Image 1 (cartoon, one colour):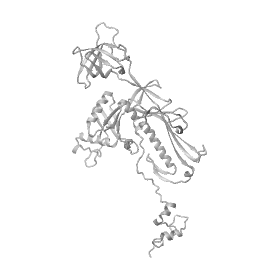
Image 2 (tube, one colour):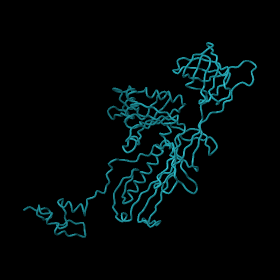
Image 3 (cartoon, one colour):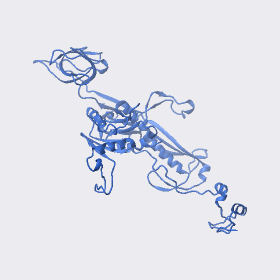
Image 4 (cartoon, one colour):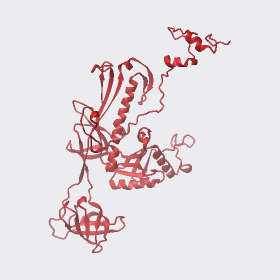
Length: 479
């Protein structure tokens, strides 16, 4: 018969050891306190083998950081934030009806062209262009119905009739000795507003569970490491809530009609929910949306050129950030590689003194096209399989890297703000940017008779997207 290192006959461990197990006061190996793999049921029930180090199977799981890179956070005291944005400086109309002697401006467009103005009239494709003089306008006051402009062409007495013409004012012409000439035009502006919403969450742990201390070595999303016990879950609940603070600012949408919660789930508060304007909703309604099956790859630079032409029309600033999903980012890398003449097949050698023998860089972090600079980065929110990576309809966002000047209704003056910024409720009595408090009867807090500890989280905030016409939302084309 053969024996193992503890003197126990091999093949008899289960029967022999379980019959005479003797606990020892120290962590010392003896033949009567040794459990083998044959005692699997016993070890699983009483002495599980636990790895202290938590496995980071998903790496850094937080998706926040986008708004910290491109925006700012500022307090507010009201239920609503209101701001005004400049309108266009020049007068122009699209989709207007023209005859050989008239131009009809629909009432919805609000005519401000008066007699004496000189205008350019063009076809819908812009290939037929004529200049004309405005003789009369009926009715002669704006915004009282469709305005009919009687015009005389310069090159010929009449102009070409169009079902959907384009018209803009380029000047005026008056005879000698005129008086009371010109048309008073009020400066155009648009007013926008948004409403903060209240976000809440909590983490609950019972008193019995807090008494069962189990240490686990963890690495936090910030890169620090250490040992935690039951508050490990609280730590993750806080990270999840902080992520949701950013996700709500991106995904929030105003309700078409107020939402009334179920009477059993209004949590003792108000009875109406109105939503808020998030980034995607604001860009869908006020920004530029570009749809393409595979942006930057199949269309190459033509995709960018189309966007640049529209940015020119909007007077956009030169420096822009590209926040992209993985497929779009790689598509742009491939597109730029085809334009690069260095090395074989346009390959870029990017590090270690640009040495071909040292390292190969197949990615691009930025480029310039026309008068615009673009800086490219991956947006984890669009790649994570538990956020927008699960959906995949948004390929990226082009964000202007600068500030906008707007009129703040609360301050009563023009202010300079980042195009994207968060307003949160705060006062001397209460700061609701990110609140956290503990209730229950566990952990040194005795606020109720509940045998548990509740860690509460709360924030009240909204996103202001100013100058949305400077942004571009990249979306996959629908079939």
